[in-house]
Image 1 (tube, one colour):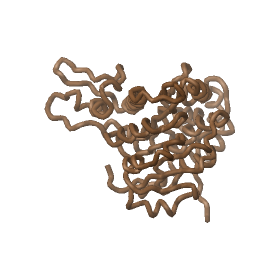
Image 2: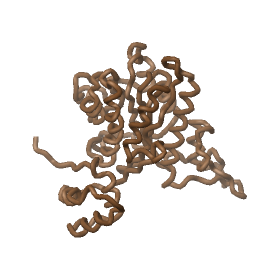
Image 3: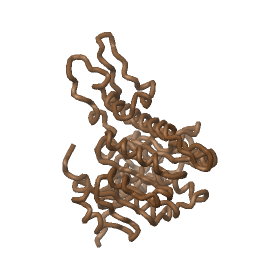
Image 4: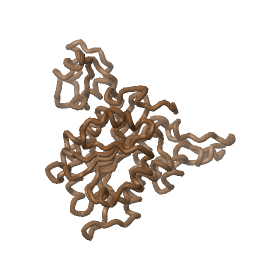
Amino acid sequence: MSSTPSFHRFDYLLRTNKHIERKLVFDILDGMTQQINFDQHWYLGFGSMWFGDFRLAHRRLGINRMVSVEYPEHATRAEFNRPFAGVRVEPGDCRAVISEMTDDTWAKPVIAWLDYDGYLNDDVVGDIDILLSRAQLNSVVVVTVNGARATYRARQSGAIRARGETAIGVVESFLGAGCIPPRFQPTANATGNHTEASETDFPEFLTEAITSYMEHHLVSLARQEGGSRLKFLPLYRLHHRDGADMVTVGGAIVNEETEELWKRCLTRQPLLAMPNGQPTYCRLDLIPVTVKEKIALDACLPDIGDGTEFFAAVRAAGVALPEAELSKYRKFYQHFPVFVESSI
């Protein structure tokens, strides 16, 4: 992994699939604004130099108290780039910063999006544990980590790959055996070599495993609010690819009274929910399109049916994108950005 900070390599606001992901995450929160006064929440994240999610939290949810954790060597630049007076940049390691937050801070519900550059490890799991132990009812906890299988594969010690040397085995060492979905369990063949999830399937596995951990961990804490046990309700299982495979997992801390409100809100988001009301695995790997292509595509949407009329209209308009990319665009066009140069 590069030691160069990611914000030195690209502008966080100019990534097509990350942009779509941010909108999808905030769509559910937007849908809860009639039931929850988010202006009483505070926001926690890694704003870096761009603060993309912070801008959405303030503009769409009305959250004014926001904390951005930043490495000390970059905190001065981050402080300069704060988009709003309500953003407080806290220099330091995430674990240290959130561990030192006062009881008064944690007394308010939080929207926390820990958007890591790196992979799932013990430090990330420790941060998740703190959030689930301190965040109040109707808080939302979201985590983004690298989802590429190669990031997790251990160096094989011999001719036989042991369970712990598979990428799934490495994740298991962080989350525990109980968080590995049965369909992804590594099995040994006749020679004792353990199977491995495919590169394509691994991000989906990782979203399920982290979700399972967050559900089980909050249950193990036996926290209560108003005489009712708190639960972790999964809302997000996202996988976006703008060069690197990244997965985003999250959900709300609910009790019996608020669980149905959040569930109904999720079911109103067909891009994020399965028919049974569970969050769907949502893969975002769309290619950029030109402004001219977007205008032509949008002129053919929305459509109903299986897309046959859309594909015919697009071809008649002269758009030469592959059909697979057209299908993705048709699905996410309402969230799709186009970036243009502007003279300041």
